[in-house]
Length: 388
Picture 1 (tube, one colour):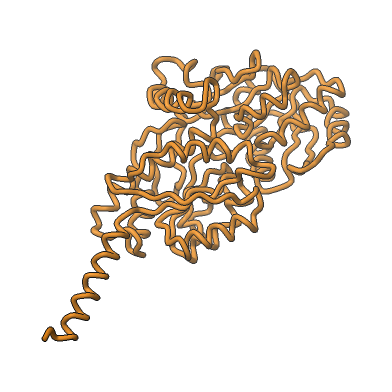
Picture 2: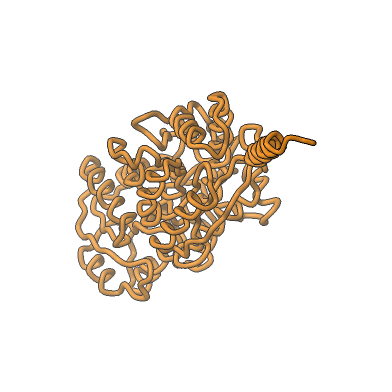
């Protein structure tokens, strides 16, 4: 008669082995805003995630996608669920600054790397903050984009500027970086206003800006809410140049803005204007490859900055997972999450659709000047304006 102890031990061993085999997949949790004010940003991100290959670093991968409705509290709930219930190895998103900053505590507590799809440097800086040790991000830092923006303004005769930005972390970060660099470039900021992503009128702020008679106005917003100040400026007869940030590069912005946003100047990632980049641009080949893939699935002229960031996120995770696997740690373990964090931080010379990444312990974004160009809205399309 078989020994019941041996039989129980063999069964337990078999179940354990089956469990380990079943958990060989790398699990990625994705939190994006596919509804709410930031939907025009989140939907292209989700569209790109649906294109991701089912492998990372040569291992099978599973993706869990949640919508936070553009709400920081919902983003925190989602991230905690992804870590505690879905047992993900890494989080991708959130995709706007307020939600990404709100999620920092959750990823630090869960010791799970987060690859944000939002722009503000405040998500990853300062790296001396322990919770930001787990945070990385895809979009260019606002300081990075403000540099090329202020240079372009200065080179094109702008001397006085009015500023209107979101009254949240995104707008404040842009104000901090822009005002600092404007001083360096001898640009005088003559007025500064704020507005909410949910506002239906900004007439009061626009009238104050126009009363200062600036040569140009910078609108520091993202997605479709950035249309409102520009439309109001047009309705009130403003004749100066209007600049926006890289957060506008969505087709919903063009659709809602129409003729009112024609001529807008903005810094952007190379993927948005990939076809018009000089042939020698170091990112053009990789950017065009993604544009071709994306447009084959979603139609001509459908690529956005945010779609490019999301494809870059897969490329970055794929590269990091390959190196993390060398540690011997298995997906689903604390050791693997740590190995992924360390591998992300050691990323070197990785070309993705929006730039070339070189990360280190002090820089969890990693882009240099190859990640930014100036764009212009021309004939209802995003076009390359050059860097000077």
